[in-house]
Image 1 (cartoon, helix red, strand yellow):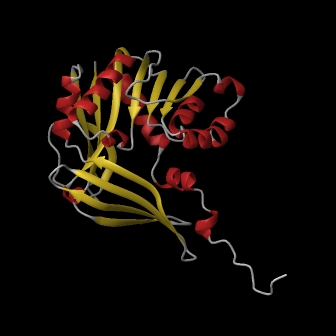
Image 2: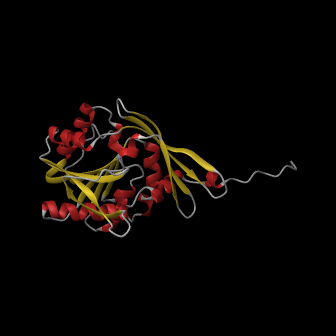
Image 3: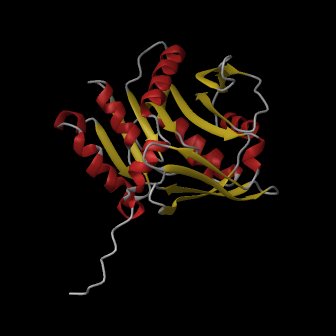
Length: 272
């Protein structure tokens, strides 16, 4: 046996990129609370059946199933490896009755056919991967067809003057640091490459854990394309400001004006 000491695995070696992503990026409780309350306000009835597009690990869909005995969810993603991770980590934690109310589909959201749903969720800016107006309009048109008559499409969007820059932002968590890396930005086409890295207390790094090639869409463009795709309304829900801290207060309301912040995240709500 070699006398050389075996190299111990680093924290990065042992890390699970999907768990890290869910811990740092997703907040299913707050998101689903907003979706359910907004749907009730707009339709006058309780939300029951959702479709989560670009679902990844189906974390949100599974959380929705757990929140109500009559909740149903369809989760759609092209990446079979990520869906399989979700089956092993999230679907596996559901009981038999809950699993019957969930359908995972490896499919293209541009062509997938699903039963009518009350709401479609396309979160975490995933639809930014559609780089042309024709393709994004086509996606919105397909979503409209998938909704019941009083259904609702929920999107999120981000922007601000820092969104046009090449930069890195670090957010500290208990056991790791989340790094958002806007690696490149082309102002002519608004194409951008965004990366997610994770750094650990032992000095190790998980580089390029996730990589995105997006078009940075503006809010006017998104709203115009929703209306062109047949939606009757496309409303921006802007986050309020905490008077004491000057930061966002987590409360989103319909707005026709927003603040010229360095960075912002909002929701866009579209109805057929």
